Length: 254
Image (cartoon, rainbow, N blue to C red; front, side, top):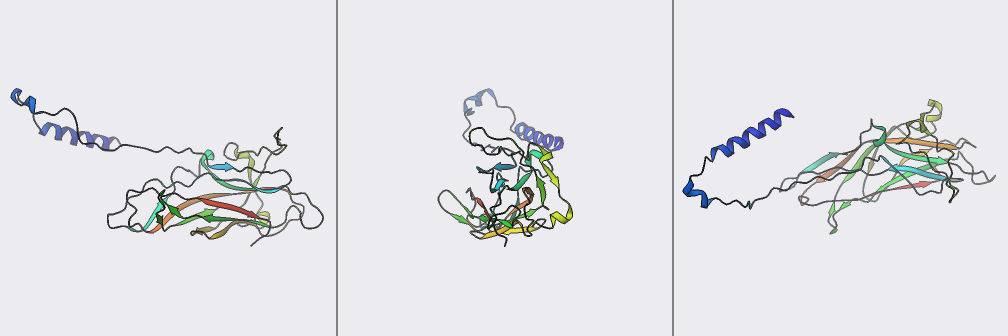
């Protein structure tokens, strides 16, 4: 970094020096008001890795946390367009606890003796909206991500005095609420796979595939290696595209 800064200063100095000194009779020809400008800017994002959902959690099967955002920064395309562009996610360090992105499901269902029992199968799907500008211009794209092997999650015992619902322990603030599961229990869940999301297509990303009757508690998978793939960037220059991913939980497995 120091070498790069030094080189830039040397080039600037050489350029400025090359112009030479103005003579007294030329001073009135010098324009002191610059007319050319170079844009400078930066967009800061928070590093919150996971976002708590609204619940309710107590007595329910619920998604408790999902990734806060997938941000891919700024890209560059040629005037005639660029094909097969790949962008890695920015601002989410998978090794920093505060920035880890988790998908967390908690099973606190009360058995009713017939159709509802804790430990029954479930699955979570992710649906990518696709990308578009505020003016409605679409950009064909897909998202790839990896899910980690299933880990245990402890929601805690804190209760909100108003809602009488759990106040979920935050896995980004307290690493101890995420624990490793025995391999035999890990085998009951999906995880440790690569998932591809295409526009408006619901894809299963996590789930309990084998029932464990009566089993309550939480389970988490860490989302990593998120990439945005754009097959054709023609017409994208100078535009900002946004979209979202909808996480949906169902009490069956598929």
